[in-house]
Length: 330
Image 1 (tube, one colour):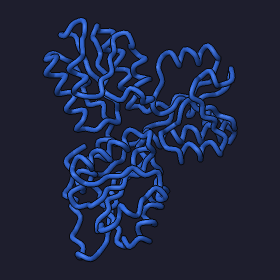
Image 2 (image 1 turned 60 degrees about the vertical axis):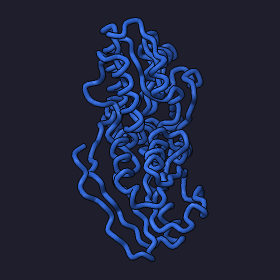
Image 3 (image 1 turned 90 degrees about the vertical axis):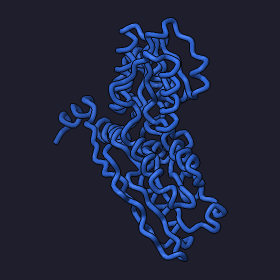
Image 4 (image 1 turned 135 degrees about the horizontal axis):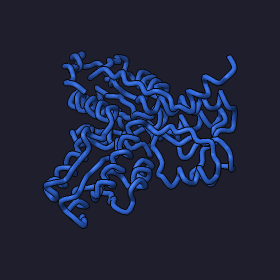
C-alpha cells in the first residue's frame, strides 16, 4: 500500500462547519467488476439473468440491477434448469458449482479475484495435510464459500476467545486464512493469538485482507482525530462498511453506518463542527453525493476531500463475458 502521505486536514476557522470527504472510498475493483458483469450480461444476453445472492452487499445496487432484469436468488435450485446464472463477488463453494453443473446452468463467475486467492490457499493447505483456521464471520457469504473448499479440516473463528477453545488433530500442522473484509486490528489480534497457541502455524504469503478494505480503514484512522463524527455510507450486511464504523469508534470518534442521507439523525450533528464521510467498498458514489448534499443543507458548507493514498487497481472481466462481448454483432 505504501506509506500514506501527510494528509492532515487544514485548519478551518473555529466557527466553520466542514465535511472531510475521505479518499479512497466507495467501489473497489472487485465490486466494479461484479456490477459490470451483470450489466454486460443483461445487455448481451437479455433479461432475465439470474444472480446467486446479492452481487455485492448494497441494496441500492441490487435494486438498480433488478430493475434492469437481474433476478436475485438465495439458492442455485431457484434458477431454472439451463438458465444463465452469475456468482456474486463473494464466491461460492464447490458444492454450489457442482449443483450448477447438474442443472446445466450457464455460469458466469463474478467472484472477486482476491476472494479466489483465498479459496486457492484453502485448497493448497488442505492438500498438504493442514488443519485450517478461517478467521471471519460465520454468516458471511464469503466465509460460506471458502469454508466449502475444505469443510472437513476447517474451523471458523471470530474472536480471540474462540482461538483459546480451538482443538486440532496436530498442533504442528495448522494454517490460517482470513476473510478479505475484516478489520485490520481485529484480525491482527486473532492472528497473534493463533501464533501464541500454535507457534508453527502457517499463513498466506501475503495478507488476505484486500487492499480496498485496508485503504478505507487507514483513511478513517487518518482523520478520526480531526472529526467529531464519522458517517459511513454502506448497507448493514456489508462487512467492510461495518468495520469502518468499528475503526472510528475504537479511536473514540462517534461512527454511524447509513444506507443514504435519509438515515442521518439530525441529533448526531448537534454541536458538531467536523464530519468525516466515507463509503464501504460496495456503496455507489451517488449515495455519497446525497449525504454531502444533506450536510451542505445542514450548514456544513465547506467540503474538503482528504486523499490518504491513490487507488488505481483494476480487474479484468471473466472469460465468459469477454467471449460474449467478442461474439456479439458489431
